[in-house]
Length: 576
Image (cartoon, rainbow, N blue to C red; front, side, top):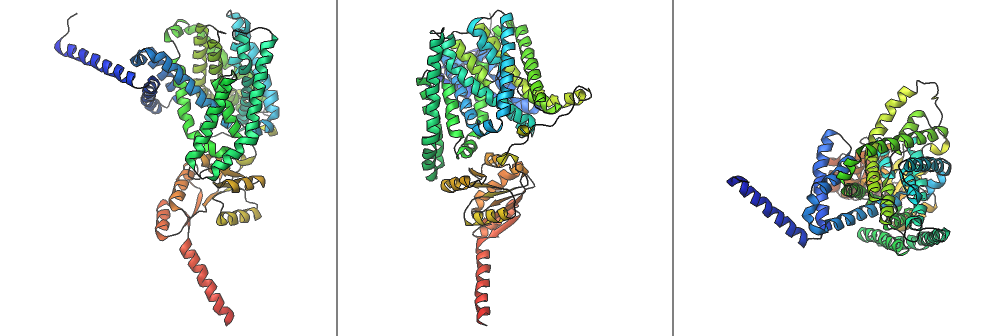
C-alpha cells in the first residue's frame, strides 16, 4: 500500500495520539477515564437530541452501545472490561439509592388497595405470561422464573419522571403507577434475597431458600431497627450542627455502610443501596435528603443507562434482531393491556388507564439488576441476557412516547360504547399532605416572623407549607401536624416538594436578601406569577430585592423606626 506524504503523516499522528491516550489511561484509573469518555459523549449526543426533541434516554443508551462497539473503550487498554463492570455497578447502586429514598411507606398504606390488589394482580399475570413466552423459546427451570419475573417489573424512574414532565405527578394514573411500582419494589426485594438459592451453586431444595429468606429477614430487620432507633437520632445530631456538608456525607456514608452490610449477608450491593435509601426515606429529614440528592438523580440515571448500553454486544443483537423486535412489542403490548385493564377495573377513566398502562409497559431498572445478578450466578445464558437487556433498554426508551400517544388514542377509543367513563376511587385521587395542596402559602423560615405569619394563616384556615432548617423546630412542627419540610429554601427541588407551582404566595421571613433572591428565582421557575414577600435589614438589601422584582419588601430598619416613632408619640399622647 502506498501512502502519500500527507496521508502518511496523518497516519503517524493518529498512531501517536493513540499511544498518548493509552499512556494516559494507564496512568489514570480506567473507570475515571471511562466516566470522562461517557459524559463527554453524552453531552454531544444530548445536544443533538434536544434539538431534535427526542427522548434523552435513547441517547444515553446509544452512547453506551457506540462506545462499547466502535472500539472506543479499547483505548482504555486491557482493563476496559473491568472498568465497564465497575461503572455499571456504580450506576446501579446510585440509582437504587435514589429510588429507595423516594420509596414511601406512607404511600404504601395510603394506596394499600392499589398496591396489594392492583400490583399483585399485575405481577402475577405478567409473570405467568412472561414464563409462557420464555417456555415457548426453550427456556426452563429457575431461569424461566427469573425471566418471567424480570419482564413483569417496570421502570419506576422513567414512569414517574415522565408523569412529571407531562405535568401530571398527582393524577389518578400517576397514583396507580406509583402503587404498582411500590408492590414491584417490595416483590423484587424478596426475589433478590432468594435468587442465589434458586440459580446459584447451592440451588435446589427448600433449605437454601429458607436460609436465604432468614438472611433477608435479619438484614431487613436490622434496617428497620436502624431506621427507628439509630438513623433519626444520628441525623438530628448532624442537622443540629447546621453543616450541609456533614449532612450529605452522613447520608452517603449510611448508604455505603448498609450496602456493604447487604453484601456481607450475601445479598447484592444494589439491594443494599435501595435499603439504605429506604432507611433514610421515613425520617423527618427525608425532604432535605431528597432536595440534596435529586439534582444528581439525572446524573445517576445517565450513568445507569450508558452503563446498560456498554454491556450490549451489538453483534449478538443484530443476529437476533427479529427476536428483540418481537420481544419489545410483546412486552409493551402485554403489560400495557394488562395494566390498563386493571386500572379500568379500579375505576380509572380510559385516558388515565391508558397513560398508566403506557407508563408501566416497559421492563425496568430492577429487571436489569435482576438479569445481571442471575447471569453472574449462571442462571441464564449470556445470549439470552443480551436479548433481554436490549428488550428492556428499548422498551424503557419508548415509554415517554407511548405516554404522549395515550391521550389521542383514548379520544378514538372513547367513541366505542364498551369504554364507558368511570370515576376514580378515593385512593387514586390526588394524594394528601403536601402533594394535594393548592392556593397555599409557602413560609420560608420559622422564626418569630414566620411563626406569627403561620398563626395568622391558621386562624384564617389558609393552608401553609413551612420550610425550615432548624431540626428541633421541624420535629416540633411535625408532631403538631404542620406540613413542614426540613430543606433548603433556595433549592429548586425544595420548591417542587413544597408544590410551589400551585401556591398563591411565598414569604421569606429571614432578613437575608441574597438567599431570598435565590429562593424567589427557584419559586418562579415553577410558578412565574407567585406573589413574593421578603425582608431586608439594610437599604442595599432592599435595592437588591427591588431589582429582582419582589412584590412586597419589608425593610427592618424602616419598620422598626416607624414602630418606635409611633410608640414614643403614644407616650406623649398618654401624658397629654
